[in-house]
Length: 380
Image (cartoon, rainbow, N blue to C red):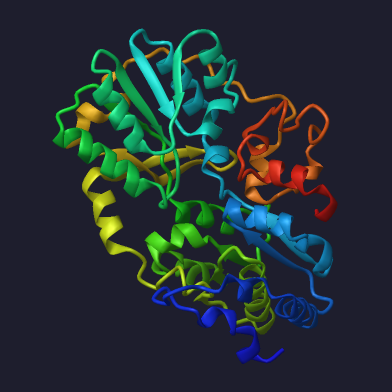
């Protein structure tokens, strides 16, 4: 397939007055890309990991696993922030919800994630004040409207959502809202990629790098992949042509043995990312060690609220007794997040564990690998 034909959709820039998304869903381009991928891969066994949960959903929705070569394996990774949140952190959120006078505010997916013996949904059903918000700034307004209650926002997410959390802390601080704090379990993506690249149980030949996260980070944080591990990575978007173009380029890099980090999503991502957003995050947060489900404790992979904003740090403000952590028996979410197994290889998948009765977080989140595989089973 000619490079100029493959790049037709990618030539749209963020500065265009209007983006014609039909170009990114063009059946002709899709067929050409699929054929090009088949020719490039040949008989070689290639493992590619989609890091972002939205990519996992896109791959399932468009049935790519069923139309791409069987020897090209698309593995899900740790790209769902709800899924990688450790049970210990969920248990702490549950303990916070039980504190008299405390309101827990968080995004919808987190409410249903089971901890060791409970969940925020179960605590809400038991009469504790747990509320779903669409933005951390909604939680700030909630604190302003109900000064008699302590509002704790459970901050979960990667680099994409962290600037908004930082902005909410600054907003609460400027308004003098002493009843607003954040239970911060934010994580940063590169540390997880390093852990997977260095994991003897995985054999990743290339990474489909996250589009949303890269709008903030740019490409520099991924450079270690080719430099230290000889693994290429390509940032892609989420439309059919986006995803296939990223896979095609990754396959080319793998087959040629020329690892590099490239950007196939220029209408959404610039190579330098968003330095203003990163500066905002640096003002409020500092790196810390964090525990990831499936990956364990990774150095400097989390974000902690800086001491100057300690009054908005729920971990400093509330001393709570957290129950002993227990992992759900039989659940293999951790192995799914590492790319060691596909969700369908978990013995609980579509048996004890379904979206209606989730055992692990990968079946809860809308971006969870297990939920995506369950929803799009015919294309898996």
